[in-house]
Image (cartoon, rainbow, N blue to C red; front, side, top):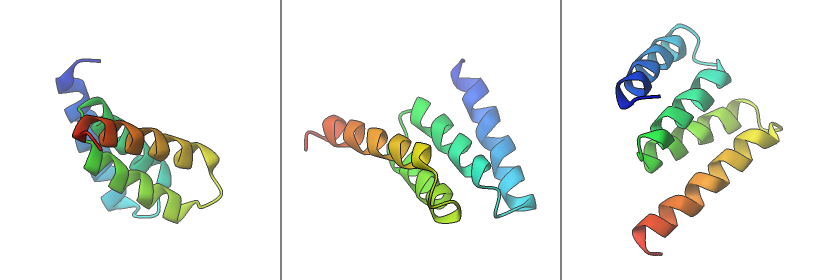
Length: 77
């Protein structure tokens, strides 16, 4: 996907989360879009919200862990 498509996806997931703040998939998908744009902190925040809403979803935790590793690597930690 091109950068513009990720931005459009983020906008769509923003709207979805406003309509239904408990729609955990919107946070997860928006987190993935932020990840693709190298916006790791925002990605982690969205994964955290998806995890808060569905704490037993292992895929959300795995995605967050991967982004945390990449963010640390990018910052030289």
